[in-house]
Image (cartoon, rainbow, N blue to C red):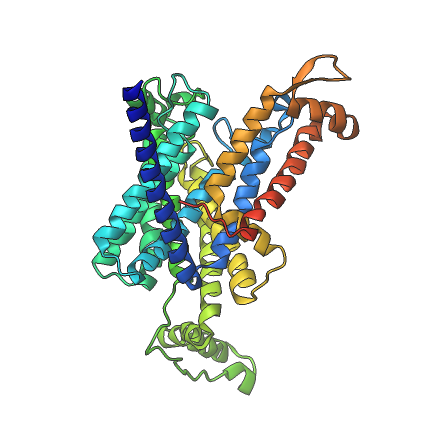
Length: 454
């Protein structure tokens, strides 16, 4: 009995010791976040909040048997609403990396210390992903080695190390915008070629064969594992595009660049129309000096407006490239095809431009503050919501309509929502109702100054 008491005391001491360490780390991180809060970009937090709400909406379905196909990941080619959520978390993760590095560097950390922090974050998210797959996801075995959190963890590691490496060789922030965009397109081209090298059909995809040979039984039940090992690598260009957006947000003022004046004769306006005057006017506009003068107008505008111009032009470029790409390559979320990556980039640049204009230039707080608070605690909010959604399924209540015992979400939807909305919208209406409740509850975290991010 005495030995057992000693062992119990030792265990309690051991637990207290590590709880104290965790508590110290939490308060140290909280203090650092508060000290460098001025570095935060409101647009990133709002976008993260929007997609946390989207994730909650997809998770909290009322009737699993009547979920809209638009709220499930596409079987192969094409794109649904559900296909947008995880890719945008990868994009937003990429956006946050430069500010994570900048904050820790400003706090006195060496590059090696920042790299260690990156590996710690990677390990935590990966382990969370393994636990999530064991508890909440169906796999062919007891553990699914790849999943949404593992995808985020591995892509975070790859993209963060690439960013730190390029910073270490003194590549300037403004140039990194285009370096990462070009890298993203090149990597996406390579991964798309591998995916479709045997053909575009699902049974010919090289990704599926490679995943099965490496992961074996430790993978998704779906034919095309949307978070498989090859899909994880193919998703990394989205993180790079997120980095390019962050580099625009972090854009440094361009010095020693001035507007170049250029005189154009305006022959038609002065002397009237003629072929010779038309030709002179065309040449006065279409020559290197004239084009240089037009482009130099960029340096006359406000620094914040330059960021919006950059984002708008890159969104337009991605729009053009994605439509050209779609002629030859299918839009495919499961393998993160080049067309899909370009389409996500098009949306990301445009949404980032709008969010930056509203949140960081106009300082709009109505509605955005709610989303920011949700975005600050993204991972714990999604985990807690998933856990409670799964737990309430164990509560069975007898339906007055079917006469059978149903899980709580099915019962509530069947008895209270379905008679009003019909089968097509019942599940989504329940999800909206529960999501609104969760968003309002999670905003209490701000009231008590709780921030539980990784």
